[in-house]
Structures are given as C-alpha cells and as structure tokens.
Image (cartoon, rainbow, N blue to C red; front, side, top):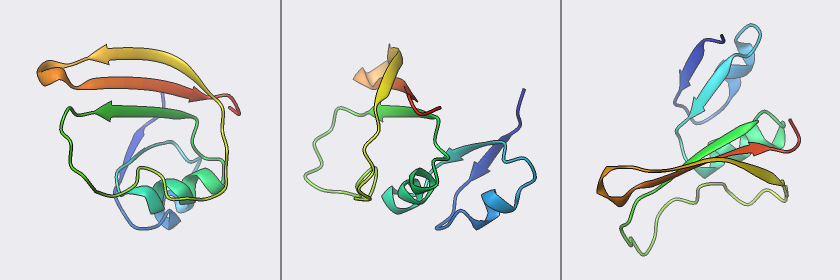
Length: 92
C-alpha cells in the first residue's frame, strides 16, 4: 500500500521531489489540479457535490486544453445530501 501525501500548496514541486511519487490528495484549487493534469499525474478523481448554490467560486480544474475520458467507479450519497463520485482516468 502506498503512503498518502497530504499536499496542500500552490505548486507541485514538493510532490515531484518526493521519492517514488506516492499518492497525493490535491486540495488547492483549479490551478494546482491543472498542473498535475498537464503532467498526467492524476489517475483517479473523487468529486463531492454539496447541495448549495453559490453563484461563483474557484473552478475545480483551470482551463488547460486537456481532454480526458473517465470511467465511473463508485457513487455515494452522504449525510446532508452530499454526493460523492469516484472516477478513474482511462489513461492510467
């Protein structure tokens, strides 16, 4: 089993410097996610949908020109109507 790296930052320099990569949990907005996507470092997505209309916010993934097909692995409904979906990248 791989160690989980809790990586919360504005760049991926620390992740790349980590020996053998490992597993990263990305929390940092669309720019951070896009930097991992551009290097094809994302193999799985877990997206939580919270039933609140905000009318604005930070994009999940900043525009980067990458198109990726995903395979649905799991759906889950959590307390408070939160829905979580898990996908695997078909490129991994």
